[in-house]
Image 1 (cartoon, rainbow over the protein chains, first blue to last red):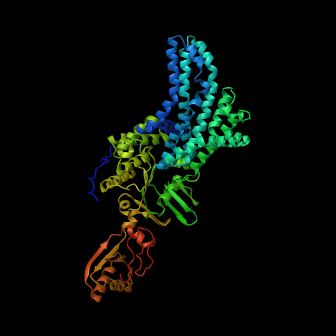
Image 2: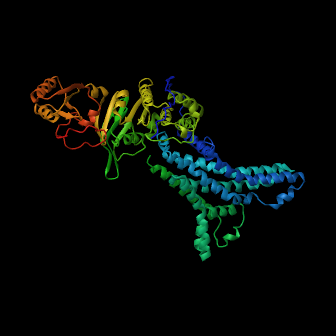
Length: 304
Length: 327
């Protein structure tokens, strides 16, 4: 035993006059909106220490980088009058950008979802929320929506950069705008699918997993394992089960909706899948519904 | 207006653990101490009143609002300071408290203003911009109190508010609680196992033990009763105790002294006569104010345990065992 350190006092409690609060009290709607805003900021580590910002900004940077590079290349090329040539190369377009950054989005979700639900549970913050004029469902949904918005921002930022780059660097701005406009609905739709599916699944795992490391590992496993299993099943030669798994596994569902929205065929690796592409959208909706139900149920039952 | 009321409130965890057992009481606004040893059911009661837990059976209401159906309205009026750590370590006190103020319905700018006021009120100044992870226990307790006060509740539930505080911090916290209750007109329910603290700030006391109500009365009723006479002799304590019991006095022991229930003046004479008769050396005779601990020693009847009470008391608050012959 060493000697006790001297008692350092945090400061005395002086009464400088407690005042009643007579101002407006907004209801649950305001509470949920505040929670969504707080969750969105926490997803990027804003309002928290510097270390919390490392992962989201590294992954965010990686997701946005290709768009920046393309637009940069377009800028330079346009000075040599060669923007047509670059654009014709179609290295990365609206249609395949998401598949290019898919893994980064998944990592972002795996890293950041536990920052919301897991952190609140680990540090016992839930009683502070549940002791306020808020339903447990409000809490669960507020956090979920905040995270979902965070992922959506991550997905849409490079798309906006790409769109603006393509339009503004063009000689004929109005024409380029018109030419790129048809890309907007499929891009938005696909971003919605990815953000709800990845975001929702990641949040569901982290709602049930207190330890951050386990939650992150669990989310990555959930994103990766079904694809691996599908490959094995196909190798064995069961295309029926393979198709079913393809309709379940999050990353293949996203490939499916991508093909649906951008009006393409499924890639060659899905040679065994012979179902209408709309089923992938149905599958997304079902999975998101299950995820929301699981999260709401978790917080309805948790004891604080 | 009734502050709190419960009717046959029961909470069981599984089949074997009964946290609250048919608890029925009613409280008027004021500073109320909720005392009981660890595991007596204090926290469970607070959580049920907040709607954080569902009772197994029975009903409860806060401000005449039923806990089961009008939880949201109740929680608008209540501030809660949990017993355990509940603050995210990587946020600053300002951010946590103003965020929670907004969750309580305050607009953003009002939330900031109230946060600054309340943190100053509990005695947090420059450090409120630092991450909570680096705070001392005392500072964390202040932040916990601040978040309970920030939305200007009508009622505060404080669960062991002095946990982990040094004596000076404890004094300040108790003073703050007392003023919150008396000067700001906020009703306070303080759950604590430390009777000495409850005694200092509360004007009303609810004592529970094993989930059952022991007492529900103004503090005066506990401390202003005639009290106890403590008698110490050099040897022959057991003989004296037997002698006194033989003369019809109710006798107990707190280790070194024999405690005699003091209903009127007669025990003084009886003790004197008995000591003289037995030829014992009287060391000390002292009239003690009735202390809150007696609640737990005596049980609901507030009668000193008889000398022959053999069964050891349950619960940690019963630190003074009944005198056992031959000890």
